[in-house]
Length: 592
Image (cartoon, rainbow, N blue to C red):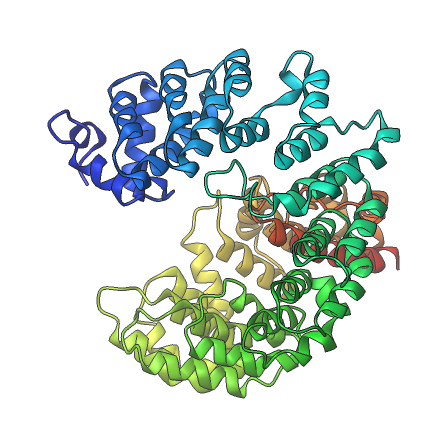
């Protein structure tokens, strides 16, 4: 694509029209989107913004939906944007309900609050009024308590429900039961309303309610409502909200899986329904719940609707019963995002490698060049030495590579280790770090490690492979003076290099470096990526790491999930579950 300045010239707007019409402007990786953000940041009331606003009155509803969504994303760091507010307000009368919802949200985000409130008071359209009430930052609205109390008896159920949710206060717990009862009374009437296309968040009424229960730390109440709503005597809409409330609980509190799993497993015994499916996915999303419900998940592995989620849940806890279904998913080219992790977990748990390795080889045979799908390579890497039967296919990839560097093949051969010795002559022809890493892991030749480190600067700023080699050398008899300096330089740089070099530093310097490690490593304990490695080093330090026991105890004793920011609520929950397990194991080794 041309440079932003060339692309956005007044004589060349076709790219913008195309990007909006195709909704490519909503794709985070889109060049079109990057150009738009570039120019709007440079001048938010400039030519680009004015050109975008033309599309707010486009005859195509899909285009209007796209442009209002884009403008809402653009105003994330540009609140109080009158030019955009002026375009949003007329769209409150658009014929398309999703456009009206998006425009209402945009008006709240870009206009002065009194203007947004005036629009709320003037509107008689339930779609617009619901969207305005949902988007309004009520804590910033003058006399908001009185306004919300009035809205709590509005003729529109969704407005009543949103108002009652907004009224909740930590300082007035006496009002909670009355508000809960009011919300419960409107729950079914709000089905499909608050999460309709164009809404602020894709959250149902029950999810809004669960959000306030978790925000106020009403753990027992959340469990009780989940149980009551999911009862077979309730309507399907209410029962689904009960499962969603259980979802919110498992994401917020560590005790939740044990509390809600019996209720969720009971739902699996019912006839197929949306409620049953939601219960299964809730169990499979949590590692703790999957362990508690392992037999129940195994019982539905062959279910055409639930089997995939059940296999992923079981596989993620290393349950071997999931392997046949996981293999079928791999052969069917599944795009399930947790599939590779599930294979890694069952491999770590000692599952029979024959079927997974054979399936991976079958897929590789269908892709004779070096560019093969990631999944079979990840599966082979997960099984390590047991994937040795695939060495001929991997060598063929090395020999057949032309324009592509076969990094995955290098990685898998390295994971296979000495059993991939047949690949050594071909690996020697590649001067890349990936090939050197594989060569070292296959040969375990000290000369390979020393030659690589000798070719690197003494002052290293980063280098995972260098840290790995230095750790191995430290285990095999120690480091030279220069290698020790390289190790020290890695440890001085915050981030992965610091954590990955800490183990080698402990091996080489021993208790003399304990105080230094205890100052640095605890800062990574709540990091889902670096935390497990930091804990492994601390566990290796044994009694020398006892000063951090109090910190570990505080983390372990917390009722709430750790504040891991991944961008996926379920992934964040699983990260907390894994960190908690790692901390408990490390504490046991440190305490002795």
